[in-house]
Length: 239
Ligand code: SF4
Image (cartoon, rainbow, N blue to C red; front, side, top):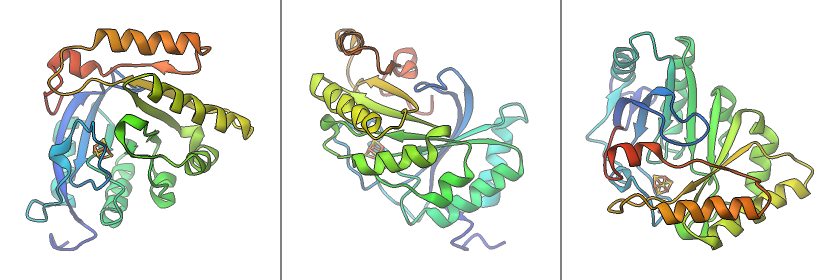
């Protein structure tokens, strides 16, 4: 197997073990495989250091698996693939090889999807998809039609996550939620993540505001904060 083979050469930012800090799997230890590169451009992105694609820093599939196995210690059989944007088209061939290898070794595989693409060949293979609904404060748009298609096809093994900074974000998310229901589909678990930006202290008032909005709008969502940020600080990495 050649390290230069594009199918088995991965643009990796980092691989580390940590406890899931957000979404419905919060509190679950996992190995994170973080891909480099993202062109989506959320203005409140908390991992801008992953935006660049740097082909000088690649890992062969064998190296990735060795690191995953070392961190897993055959105890943590869960891998979360994140980024950056792991679903960027340039990653997909090597991503598919990685997922197949992880599944062959009995790992439960979650992928973090930015909500801008449905990549059938990837979503068919993984155990779980965490799909973003981008709110206005991100200045990125999630197509409601694409969201509907995603939920129709993969809602049985998915959560939807929306970062909420204010009432406008909440209302936009609520509007999308109703669009799905109006189409006769019961949405999967849908989490609101109160925005917690690097450099801030824990945003207690914003958190309470999001909880109150959810209560006032009939409790359609689960409000789950980013635990790792209040435990380690919003700037901490690999936690
Ligand atoms: S998709 Fe994720 S990595 Fe990319 S800009 Fe948005 S939050 Fe950041």
